[in-house]
Length: 130
Image (cartoon, rainbow, N blue to C red; front, side, top):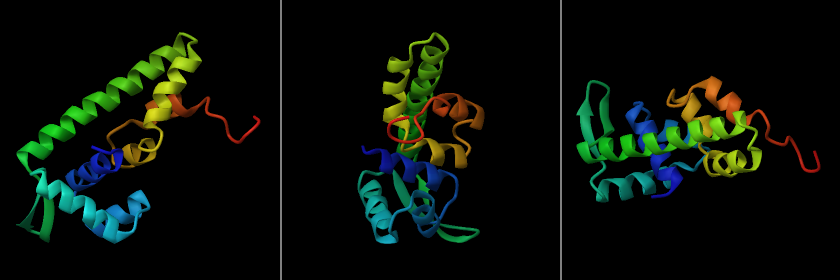
């Protein structure tokens, strides 16, 4: 699955609506609905009536997939932090580069701690040539 698919799963788990997910991920709403449809077809999300009206929710398979992805992301983030503490910047940066598009969203949703995010991104170049 693409990183955007996992981020949509994270946002659905957090109770976000498709419109809120679009704003959070800086996507067009129709793109979010396309991802949700794909996730529904894979049996990872379903529409359910809740106290707040109809909402998309994770299925059991969706929760398992999300937990697996979280373990992978957090493992990579912790490994990158360890490599950085050991002075192995290039190896750490390679891991961070794979996670970078997802980091702000994961922090906003409370999946990744702000402290870990700061540690991971503290050595990123601000602009070219710096």
